[in-house]
Structure formats: C-alpha cells, structure tokens
Image (cartoon, rainbow, N blue to C red; front, side):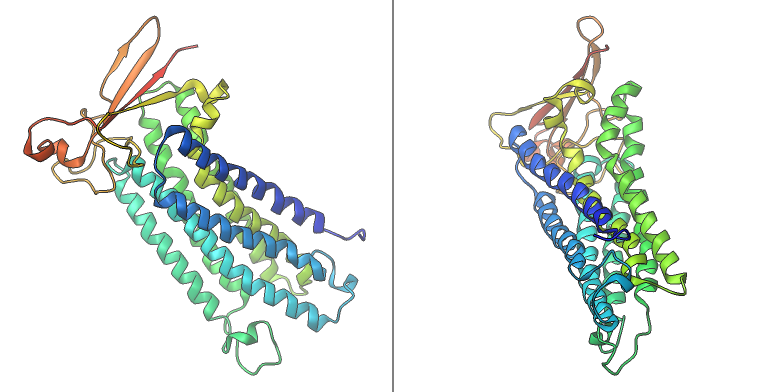
Length: 368
C-alpha cells in the first residue's frame, strides 16, 4: 500500500454501514417473529432492496482490484484500460444505486402508510410515493441517454455521441433524491410531535426514524462531491472520484438501515433503557389472525365519511386517535387503541351497528 492509498477509506465507508444494515434487516425479521406479525409486501421489498444494495457494495469494493482509490499515475495499467474499467463499473453502479435507493423509498413509505394512512399526512405519503416512482423513471432515462450507442459510455473507440456526462446526470438526479429523502424524514416527525406523550417518550419514538438524517446527509454530500468533480478541470478519476463513491455507498446502505430501524422497537425494548420508555402489548382477538397491519397513529383523517384504503384496517374511536388516557397506580398512565376493519367503523360487521375490535394495543408508561 502506497502513502497515497485511500482504499481503506472506501472499505470502512462500505463495510460499516453495510454491516449495520444487514444486522438491522435480520433483527427486523426477528422482531416480526417476536410480535407474531405476518410479513407484508414492504418486508419482502426491503430484502430485495438490500440484495441490490449488496451488489452495489460489492462493486464499490471490487473496483479496488484495478487500482481505484490510487492516483492514476500509481496504477500499473495503461490509462485507456483504467478509464475503461472505471466507466464499466460506473455503468453497473448507476443501475444498482437507482433500484436499491429507489426501492428503499417505497419500503419506508409503505410502512408510513400502514401507520399513518388515516392521519393528516395521508396525502403527503401518496405524493412522495409518486415522486419516488418518478425519480426512478428519471434515473433510468438519464442512464439510457448517456451515450448513443450505450456501449460508447465505457468504450471510447466506438463511434457515437455522449450528450450527457456521467457527473451531470448524477447531479441532476441527486437534488430530487435529497429533497424526497428530506420530506420522507419529516413526515412521521410531524405526527410523532402530536402524540400525547411527554417529551422523553416522543424522543424515544423519533429516534427510531433518525437514520433518515444520515440518509439525507449522505445524499447531500454525494451532490456536493459530484458537482466538485464535474467542475474540476484536471480530473484524476481513480483518486478524485473516490469521495463520490464513498458517499454513494453510504447512501445505499444507510437507506436500507433506515427502512428497518423503525421496526426494531420490540428487539430494543428487551434491552430496556431509553427504548423501554414506551412499552406496547398487543392482545389479539381469539377469532381473528394477525394480518400484519400496524395500528394507525396520528391526527384525524381529512374525510371521516369516506372509507379508508383496504390496506389500512384501523379507525380510532376518538378524534385524537387515542381511545383513553387515565391514571393508573401512582403516576402510571395507559393509552388504549383498537384495531378494527374500516367498514366496522361505519356500520359494524355485516351491517351491525357498533365497533368490532380485532385486536387491542395498549401503551403503558411510567414516569421515572
């Protein structure tokens, strides 16, 4: 290893977040089994996104085989061969990055929908879903428009044109990605702040979504370094391009981590401490099996007369979402929520008046 070897930086940036994302994904499935909740479509989609992210991480590390992370002058290969390796791997990078990060957006938005589909952020979740789909389409379009024919992207000897530089296309898609991630981060925090809980409890719930901050930072840093590299006159691709690769691989793995972290409370709760300040127990009805639907939290739905989407199987008895808040022994408090089918909220099952409780969730906390 030479004194100008930055490959260890890439190893650390790739392997540390990747390990965290892998552990979180395993614990996500452990939590599902622990709570006896059926896996739903976003659980399977998170596995697909992580698998694609694994490919991106592997490509990022595999680049070091030909000297990525070293100055081009220190690589014992002809310059044409180095450039060829760089753009072939970049081509694979762009596809893997697009679908790993793009699918991760749908994983977390699917979780939000199950939690907040009857809340005031119902429409923002839908809008963010449309924007996320649009982001994937734009990314794929930009990748396909890099060069005509496409092979010219990594083979300069092929006749053709390249109207878009790789850095321009990456930068053009980077800004929408950052904006979408920022709003995905803010959406649940709005509803968490409305919960009737002390500040300490609100923070305990908010921490479960905090990985989104790291995703926003990595997305922003990718934009900054991509722009800096595009403006640089004398580019050393294997040296100057390392910063962009580092933040991109962090972005991919942190996005995967962020999709699993909010579902790890049952695991964290077993360790006590900060995450045990909000304790939840689910008591299913005897005649109904779990569907995997999470209880909906948040403020009042915008249209109380309309039927909720079939994916959401929860209505609240009260305007604020919580059924009751009462003092128990000493300073203990309990909040009870009921999980019911949408039509039960209006007419009761099979036309009967009233509410049929499918399962009941009780949140109990004790003041320290």
